[in-house]
Image (cartoon, rainbow, N blue to C red; front, side):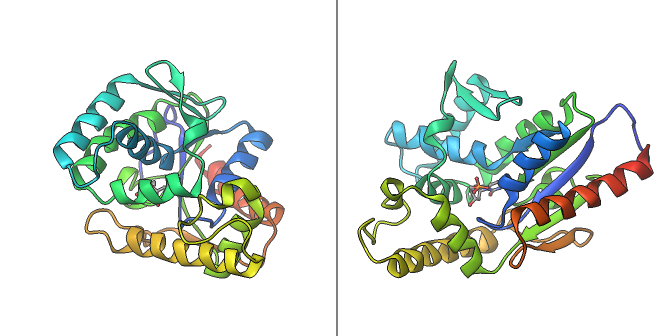
Length: 247
Ligand code: DC
């Protein structure tokens, strides 16, 4: 691969929900000052804005308008990983499991994905940081197929659900799933999260366009039996080893 040294060193981090992508990227940014583009936020934003306008996800014509309008009016603050629409932060609306599940539904639609490709590439390539991490489902396969390093971060379903469960505040738990209350026994709540996560995995893996899959040249990191610190150290070592080769 010919290297343009003015381009950032791009790390594609793909994997299923709850595999640890955003926690690892956030830690690496704090420790190393690297840039981070969380591409899931774009799909979450489209689902959120469509919901606000009461547009059904089956109405692809209106959804395309939502995407066009979003592309025109959004801003991404890379320092704080905050997404703005029409001058206002919408990040606080995008963080629930419900927002993730809805994002997964709009992410199945080809025209939505197509419109977001140049947006993601622009955010990644225009970064002024020497190293940029981009996380999502198709970064290494579609968005930046010639990324300098590709990591596929995953963990078994039970571990991912357990992590998500401990991250969630009791009052937000009810948004995890329509079929469980936050006063239900912990095991039932965990099972509900596992159920919803399995559905989201299936939806992301089986969609016809740009499904979640590991690029053949990605490095698989299974985080099931590792702490966040261990995974951060492992991914950092992978990046620094490859980055030094480029310099
Ligand atoms: O990474 P996340 O949980 O914020 O992503 C939410 C959903 O958005 C995910 O279930 C599928 C979709 N997504 C995608 O299809 N492609 C990406 N690059 C990022 C997210």
